[in-house]
Image (cartoon, rainbow, N blue to C red; front, side, top):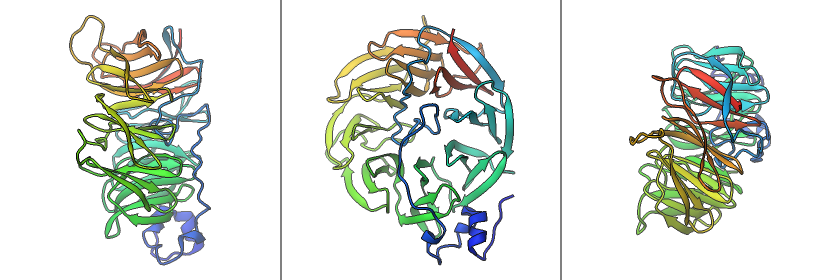
Length: 393
């Protein structure tokens, strides 16, 4: 399915992409890669990755997403339940993962277009859409698929966290060759542009800086996105809580400031690595519309002023009339509303006041709603074994 070859010619490299890259370090990567672009912009009608853009803001620049009530525009069963990150949308295609396949749906109608499976390897994360391809993790490999065709495969020596696409480059950290490395791949063919020894996984990007973290979460780093060199390193020593977020705990970047952390919420200057403020606000999901940082966990959403960390409001998103905590899978935000994927359903809150706008509850007995993706007039979510498109009722 994916060509593998120990002999590396230009033709083979461009055909095999990352599959051949493991043996390609004796040639100059620049001979086989395009010039690196770090353009972080995302088309307004797209949600191509977790958090929508490389800053992981979760912000959708739309004023037409539903705010009064919703109805189901379409619902498509895709297969075995998977822990949805969020559906990803690019152009007219929506991509979702099952436990065994990558599925492409027509974003307007929900009609299935194609499926792609990677043999015995189970998909683990993604997909992200970059350079017209849907890329996702399975086993120790990163796959790129387009129009039901395998474009390239990049193989590592260990499993790795989700990848971060920026412009025409995909960043990931994995055990590669004989050491842990931060690797920058050419998105068009999976060939490494460069690699550097690093145990820090890339979390988010802005202003030429990759903000990264290791495990445990005691250190945050700012890395040059053109070569991986360190600009700054910030240790938790003397500070409360873990300064680097645990997996799944945000983070987001907005207006030159990184917001993250596990035990507390930290605001860190992206260029300098200095702490601007810190406050009590925990949770596994984050988003920002620039003015406000939204963080959610344990059934509550808290809105924090982005300039000083003061709390604007805090609201419960559990089922009305129930006291038990509702788990939260993810957030998306516009200028007017915050969309919360929760065990109680898809909950929409007014971004300014926290007032509940509506709740879309899944059928009784189904699992919780996955992280939402907001594109144009619709909100897309995964519910158990299906993808659902919701629009204003």
